[in-house]
Image 1 (cartoon, rainbow, N blue to C red):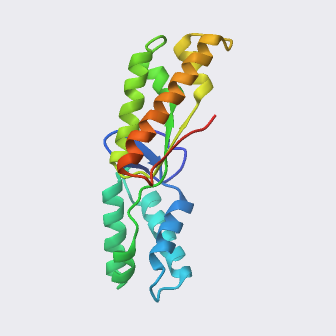
Image 2: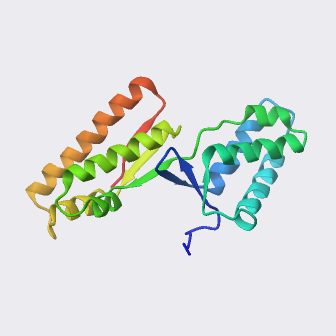
Image 3: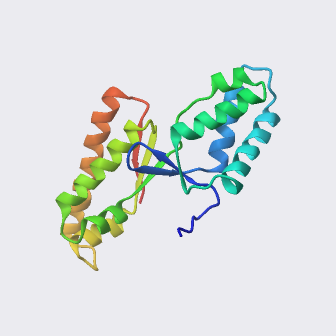
Length: 187
């Protein structure tokens, strides 16, 4: 059995990317959907709590597809007579966090080409799945693992620069088609 860091399932975005289903994201999505309607903000927050309750107490899986989640939300809104809110919902999935250190672990020490292929697959999957924000984190651990270094060296500096350059190049390719997408590197 998998122990989730939270009670709600992960949201599958694209073929291989997962995002946390966070309360604040869900509430904001539903609150935004009520704008321009006669539905008060408190009702959106109440519906958000209902969706959370379903996901934590009744949904059997540990992962739910983004399209499935939005379809269930729309169906719930329509059953409550809130068709205008259902039609107004923004189906943008939550931000995706990519663990560079986990990709380095999967690639194996010294297998930089495998790492870059895994990273490209993750970035493509997230953006193809509709994510507008992708955050890469764990750079230092990733670089140390790939270079098999306990201490930071010049080789680590070069590898870090290569990873940053690779993400920047990917960002440029992606944003030429989807300018709203943000690819970020956190520490």
